[in-house]
Image 1: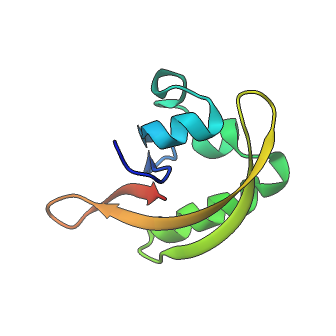
Image 2: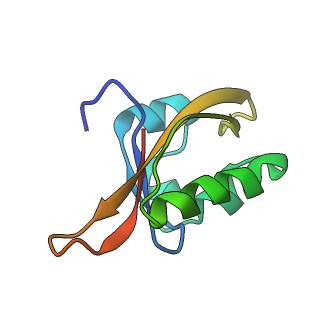
Image 3: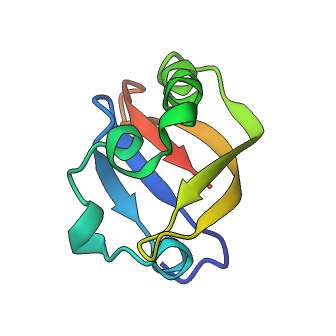
Length: 102
């Protein structure tokens, strides 16, 4: 949680299950405000929802994406551009359990 980069995670349904301190500082939402919420539907601008969903879906299939740029709207309503590296998350048995984004 002391990383210098924003880190978030979603489960296989797209619900936020990881949100570090840097992500909180960047966008202004606390852990309690984001946990369990659908990342794409709640926090991605409408025009980028399909594209971000596609990147997350690819990662859920084991195909990672680097340097995908898209806008986020902060809690204060400011649009910021972010770069996403989406990586598949797996459990101890190798089953896909979600995506981590940095």
